[in-house]
Structure formats: structure tokens, C-alpha cells
Image (cartoon, rainbow, N blue to C red):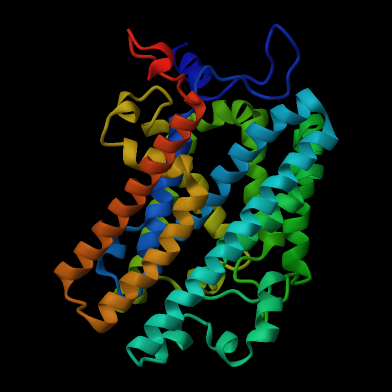
Amino acid sequence: MARSRDSRRLWPKLWTKEKRSMVPTLSERDLRLDLFRGLALWLIFLDHIPSNAVSWVTIRNYGFSDATEIFVFISGYTVAFVYGRAMEQSGFVVSAARVLKRAWQIYIAHVFLFAIYLAEISYISQSFENPLFTEEMGVLNFLQNPDVTIIQALLLKFKPVNMDVLPLYIVLLLCFAPFLWLLMRSANLALLASGALYSVSWLFEWNLPAWPQGVWVFNPFAWQFLFIFGAWCALGGATRLSRAIYSPITLALSIAYLLFAFGIAMTWHIPSLGSYVPQIIGDTIYPIDKTNLDVLRILHFLALAIVTVRLVPRDWPALKSPFMRPAILCGQHSLGIFCLGVFLSFAGHFIFTEISNRIPVQFLVSLSGILIMAGAAWLISWYKRIERQGPRPPVTKPGFAGGE
């Protein structure tokens, strides 16, 4: 009985007694989503800085998945929760318009980030007479052919290094409204359709073309599955999975898989350990493709999610502690903080290259970047709180007509 009560607290109900609602009802915001999205943004920032010793704390070094899976899944969950309610209350057309508006906002943010990012890289490269920066960050084509490259960038085909996540998110949002409509009516069918698209993309090697060559780093035909799975969980799927999630067998299998992934990951850092891995296992699991979201990456993320859900309940008191507040605020303002993180990651790369890459400097740069991201999130939150309060009425001093 205790387990049943915990699962009801953890996952929102699919149906309310007052009205048959396809959108879960929560009394308050689930801070776990904000917390882990904020942590994912910090991990992405650390991973984006080349040769950063602090990035050894990120999960990509100890398993098959990384912070990108966390970010995409939570984004799908929150998008479905927000726009599913809008679709239920206002219908498909209004909800679809709001989703497209959000996609447009992210597109504008991507264009501004692109311009600022190029300016940062170009300025640093010229000021310090180091053209390698332009090659490393993938902007040399822009400097050589700016007229053609800018068009390709606006079409989301040309993307400098570290700027692949937002275009993926834009495409996922552009195609989300029909999936949301289907999720609201037959959630399992929508998830099945998403899984079919994922499988077909592998079978026929579907991907979007990049410029000047190659394909997208994050294949949207594949990564949409994790996004839709997050949406499916938000609209009642997590409730249906609650019994499996809290099964001791599921927990044991998840821990075993995480240990297996950890053991394989250690062979990447310590090649001598590779001799202990049977050849048949290596032939079976490799390559573990990030571009097309390998099944092993999905399973690793799910195993992490199951263990995390068991360890961090929705009413975990630490979620309201001041120590968690910086990460939660970053998660609540993820778009702006992600853009800031991309900008800061190149600044860190510049410091390591031109000033010093000693271990204390790497720790200082990494910590400073996270503090700047947290401070920016606090400022955004403070400003939005002031805006919600509205303008204050004029104060009239006693004894003076009109306040003069």
C-alpha cells in the first residue's frame, strides 16, 4: 500500500473526478524536472569546453548516454504538459499556433546566438591571430563565403560546433502539434507511430542534410522518439508504468545495465581493460551511435531515470533547499541559459588556449561559468516576478496635494 501511495504522489493522475481530462493535474510545479534540466545545462556547458578536466564529472564518461538525452526527454515532457492543457481547453488550432509560436521564439534565439557566437569567435581569432579557432568551431566556411553560409544558417543547415541542440528542438516543435493531437486521443498509438518512425529512420538511413556536407549531428527522425516518449509520460504514460518502475526486478535490471555500461565506458579511458570484454559483445554493441540515438543510449537513459525516480521522490525536501535553487532556476529558464552556456563554453576554450590550461584554471573557469549561468537565471526570474506584479501605484505624500 505504501508503494501505491508513493506512485500516486510521484506521477500525476490521468483522469480527474470532476471532468475527464487527458492532461495530468498537479497542485504545484514538479521541481525535479527543473532541477534535472538545469543540471543537464550545466553538464552540457562543461562538455562543450574542449580538454576540460572538470567534464570528467559529467555522465557521458561513465555510460552510453549524456546530458542531451535528459534535456530532450524533459523538454518533451514539459511541452506536452503545457500545450496539452491548451489543446484541451482551446482546441487543436489554438494549441498548434502556440506551439509554432514557441518554435519561432526558439528560432529567433538561435539566429541571435548564431550572430553573437560568430562575432565572438571571429573577434577572438583575429585579435589573437589564431585562425585555428575558426576551424575548430566550424565557422571557416562563413568567413570564406558569408553570403551563401548565412542563407544555409537561416535554413538550419549550417551550424557551428555546439549549436546543434536548438535546431533539433525547433524541428521537433514544428512537427509536435499532430503528435500531441494523437497523444490526447490514443497515447499508445502515438508512441507506436513515433517508434515506427525511429525504426524506419534507421532502416533507410533518413536524416536531414547539413551544409556544406554531411547530415545533422542530431538526427530529428531518431531523436523525436525520446521527445515523444517524454510527452507520452507527461500525458499519463508514467502512471501506467508506475508499477513497473517500482518493481524490484526493474530496479535490479537498471542497476545491472548501468554497471555494464560503466564497465564498457571504462575501456574507453583505460584501453588495457578492453581485453576483458568478449569480442562478441564488442561486435554487438559498437558503434554506439549518438547521431541516430542508438538503442543502447535510450536504455541507458531509461535505467538512469528509473534509479533517479526511486531515489528522488517528488516531495523530496531537498528540492526546496537553497542549494538546489540555482540549478532549478536554470532549468526554469532553459532557453536563455543554454544560449549563455554556448557563449561561455567558447570563452572557456579561449582561456585554456591563450592564457592557461592548468587544472586550477580549468576548475575556476568551469565554476565561474556555472555561477554566471545561475546568476543570469536568478536575474531572469527576478525580472519576471517584477513584471507579474505590475506597476506600483503612485505614492502620495501626506499633506501635499497631488503628491508634490
